[in-house]
Image 1 (cartoon, rainbow, N blue to C red):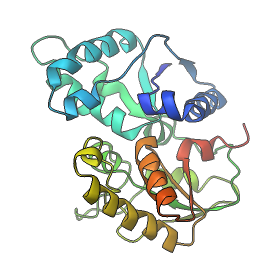
Image 2 (tube, rainbow, N blue to C red):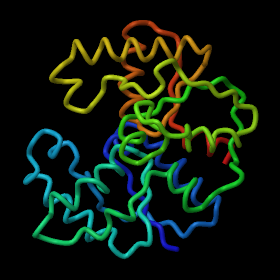
Image 3 (tube, helix red, strand yellow):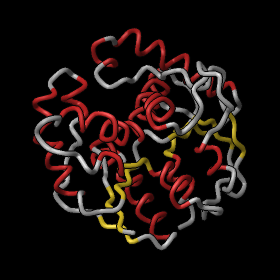
Image 4 (spheres, rainbow, N blue to C red):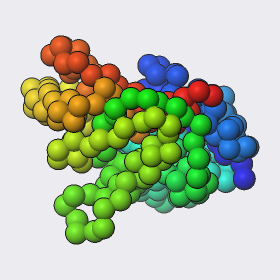
Length: 245
């Protein structure tokens, strides 16, 4: 099984430690993982802004770069969801996006494909789990509260294997943090208010850290927390799972 590691823009530019942790974790499970050089954005910012044509060259490059891998794994629920759900539509009639159906968030890959029964992480802290919108409603990382389905959470399933951890979820556990990409720029006041409410709910759990599968959501909440002097830290879930490697 050959794995192509896709590192999204946010991780590459701002949180490279998340990419390193993802690579180390996959190697821990003896996965044949390769990081193709020259990779760029998946095209989500352009498409979300209404400029799908501008994203087409990026989609084509992504397809050509990762088409020969069995799976493409990314430490980003939002980017993995964008590739899977929107790449085929963007390139409809132009090319077949064979990579879309085999692109997965790292949590999804560990849980559903590798079906891991142990993780190397040791994290003796209280954490509150942030269920990002794309992860819940496009990738199925957890059960959406608006649907009458048996509850599940793949993030928590993995975190339960971490030594010393105490796991919590906030009230209104799958409500948006207010980031939403361009939404946070175009509707700053609403986005900020949503972020403050979300961070406070995480704090109310008694957690020391907020964790989740999206660096973008964690970045937004971290910015809100810093500006409002709210005392809580933020860490990507893969950093917890790989802690100690």
